[in-house]
Image (cartoon, rainbow, N blue to C red):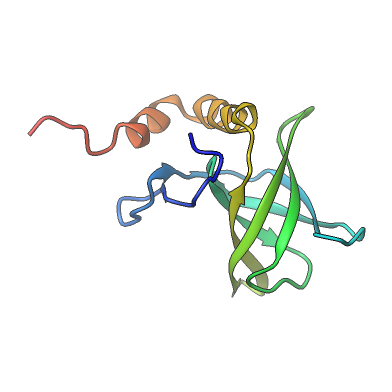
Length: 133
């Protein structure tokens, strides 16, 4: 996978992203570049290229943030992210982020996490569009 990590993921049939997204509810800590104040949130969905995060702090598009996602107990990944969009749903800010400069080993941990959550769905998403005509 490219270290550039452009957000081209697929989660639902109506979604045209390249990398699959999986519904997850993982704890997240994040802070803005150059700041020390940390905020908490939870993932709504996740791929090795981006995520939707339910946030508890004020966020705006076009900001860079540092994220730590706890994939499983004792398994955390650090990610650089760029906020693409912000929307309010159920009175909570949700932020869509694209990851950048993500090392291959971190991408592999995210994929492994998705595989362990639901192997069948993972394989269906991974090979979507490869069906015989």
